[in-house]
Length: 228
Image (cartoon, rainbow, N blue to C red; front, side, top):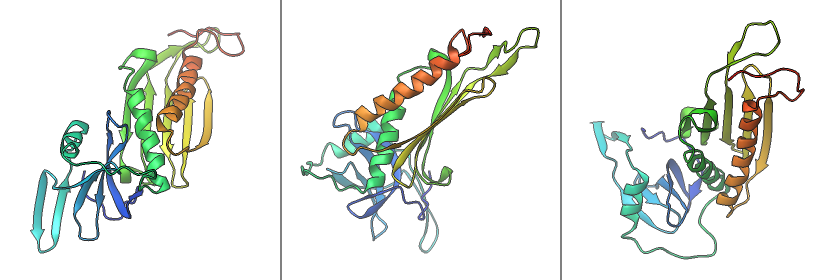
């Protein structure tokens, strides 16, 4: 992903985050790339930091550069393993970090359900400036199925769509709909700093409940059967 100087997805120790890598499986902290006032890139989890140099650096002239990140969680944790952590009661994050941290935790839980399980066809996570809020977004799409909505009517194809979005107002929004059944879910949640794993499980319970509703054999009114 190229560097976009206007992207602000939170700050660590006053430095803006320009890329989220994932979550360290050991300490469960978010792994991030930040940009300092000297245009240096730092890999950090809030307790450890080290200067990093992107894998691709193309200079098109004086002061011009294109950066491409290919950092993985494994590579990031390996780089930080050589740095002694600074342990403090308060992590040097601003509130936007916690919002994105929660999205990362949700995505990791979504990935524990392989393609095809629970009727999930695919799940992806958008990074940074791919959409308006410059925050992270998890998208989950269900498997396309045939549904018999009314007797003597043709079956219609449809699937569920779910999004979990980090908002600039420091909230997480859960949006879900089914393309033919008419099921809709919209919920905003305040982020609880320090409880990313617990709150991610709560969000996943909401997601799984919605998926169950879409996959159930009988609609809420109990009148018509669904064909899968």
